[in-house]
Image 1 (cartoon, rainbow, N blue to C red):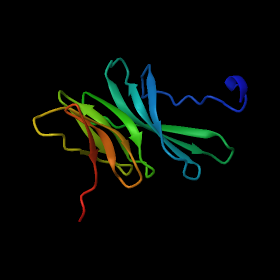
Image 2 (image 1 turned 90 degrees about the vertical axis):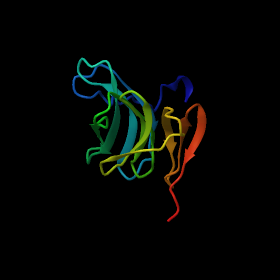
Image 3 (image 1 turned 45 degrees about the vertical axis):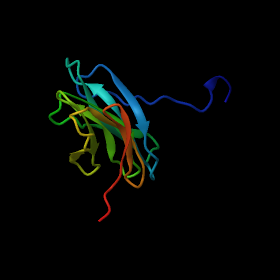
Image 4 (image 1 turned 120 degrees about the horizontal axis):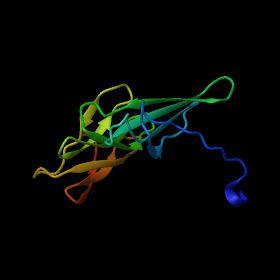
Length: 148
């Protein structure tokens, strides 16, 4: 499309309650009438950022309804960087040392093990098989489900 003018319309995802900014880092695959996006937002006057999962659902009239979930839990800061096809989100949380994490679409979260030595880590992306890529201690890492 020339000049990007035709066929595109912005949809504001919004912020967490009281927030003043938000950023989107990944958009999951469209499944039926639902799309999952992941990113960050601040909350109220808090300057720290929180991981966010936005769920967009197209209603009967064709309009997109947007809901957001603050994934931060007890961390001071967190960020969501990747979305799996099943709606799981990966990213990072920190209350001191940064940890790579996976937030499950059904609720709950798990911390991914970093390299030994107390180094910080971050999860950047996840695929449909649950394999997660990111970094730990300055090294590229791949987290993969353990074979049963």
